Image: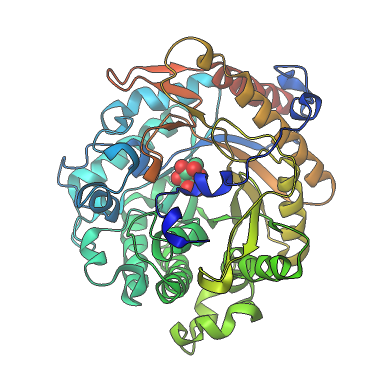
Length: 481
Ligand code: GCO
């Protein structure tokens, strides 16, 4: 396969490569639609929430002293986002924050995962804070707590200050130290109101898609950049966890990983071996360092040049909870044109797909949860992202009646519940996402929101899924009392 022909593909495009015939509708919609929200039977205290990230929703990229991030650079110098779009406005959350918090609370949801923008808090990536940036997150935390919504704060959701990229970004070891400093100072300023800290979002995706394939910011390519970034992200995560503890943070501390079962594209031996290598670099290279301080044997020699003595002890940190982002399985084929001779390939299964998007395989959630439970026995897991995208403007008409999204969420909840019955220690589920927002190099094309955002007026319009999911959370809340 020629690498060039894939240069404009997004992560979603990669998953879509092998679109094939759909499963029979009965399997796609196992529940009557919409299923009765009270029929799910999650245990008392199970957290239902929604997730967002700063760069994808805030906009206001040049306001109140915010510095540039690698994504501003990626969107502008030159623009590498589909359709020439950028996130200068995104969902306009910076100016609509109180309304967005009210949407969460009014839906009946009691948990909100969001990220703080590093360059809004520390514009040049150093220790000089931006008071107006801190004031914004002060207001957000206060608004959430006033409305009875529990904050789950992600520290790093891919928006590295461009000033740090200029010094090498994640290919430089020093960026790990800067992350720890950012964690410490943020905790000292906001920590009194943060009950849940999540250090990273999807190390594997950021390292591979942003530093090896170049489809995401910072747009670097090649195996060496990939493994340098991967190791420094793992190291930075460990240092940041230590820094949060040293700061006296009262909240629980965890992190978020993209965990997808990796499946060979075909029964051929070389595809099976490629899938094993990719699994080691995607899932193993994030979870093994965190839980065991080591890298999987299949990639250890490749990553070794970046590892120094003592790193193992820093990377292996006890955490209170592991967030898992799950959307689908990844299908991997032998492909010598790519690092590790592995790349995305055909789907050997007849999966349904969501509009222009990813294969719908809710049983993959069962597979990954039970596998992680078995190998790592995390203290607690929660699904930090799972969601369904539609395409195009959907602020009126049928897309607002999004029963397909409801079906997607329901199917995943059924398999999640089944995994819990099989021993997976899962305590929560967060839908990606609250709002239609900036979907990285796909721009504003894909809509993951429970709430539509009019691209011109920024009016928020809850979709049917928002009401249904809120009712599900409320039904469980009621069972608790
Ligand atoms: C990611 C991120 C989110 C995405 C979501 C849908 O996984 O890429 O955590 O920022 O928007 O996954 O693609």
